[in-house]
Length: 296
Image (cartoon, rainbow, N blue to C red; front, top):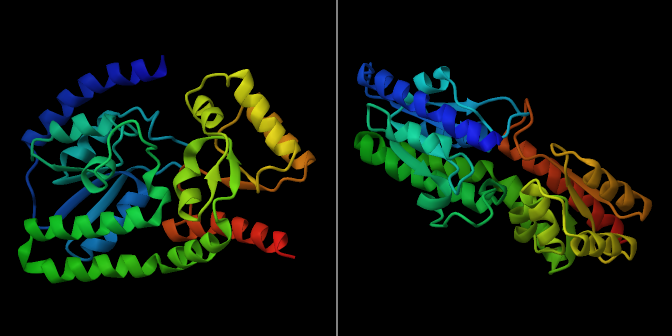
């Protein structure tokens, strides 16, 4: 019901976007980027350097882009952009229509579809693999250069700068992957699956996690299988999305702790005061500690 309300709300907002865009003119030649989330805005800001601005629509770490309801303020923000960066894959689809209604004919870059060439139906949490963020930086540099050829070298250098900023994350991913080796882990939701795959782990409860993410009660067989995996230590650890709650999740986390199965706590959105690198390292260091304890 909430998704239907969001769709109904977007229609008049799109009309407002079009109206705002018709009267919006660039005050200078700098590129103006609007991104759905703060971590995508951070990539764009780094690649732009002094040649533009990048602003996120969503700053509140408690707001999920999947459930975000755009307002007239959102419309005015998007109307000023000539580049719009969305996650895509159905995750922040409210931004697609707003970008297309932009009177400045903003370029819409959907990370899932336009950078990674994926289709709706795959795991949309693509930012949790740092390799995807590197690809986004490269894509942005190329697209910014087309709009502003005289600063092409700067954009390319800035993209490489962003890639270097990710090195603490990519180095730790490589380190952890050596110990992952296809070992099984469980998750309360598929939010962190792409990072877990990057470090070599295999998700044992995919069906259960997807059912929870969709807001449905898990099938009894899926719930029982996860409970048995925890009780019998068939998984290395459990990954909990701490921004999602409910009796079932609480009971699973409690069972994991009772069975002495480590729990890795992650969030779907960027915590206040963090950047992409510090955010990812916080989660990876929890896995690192688990691997070190297991190796003793």
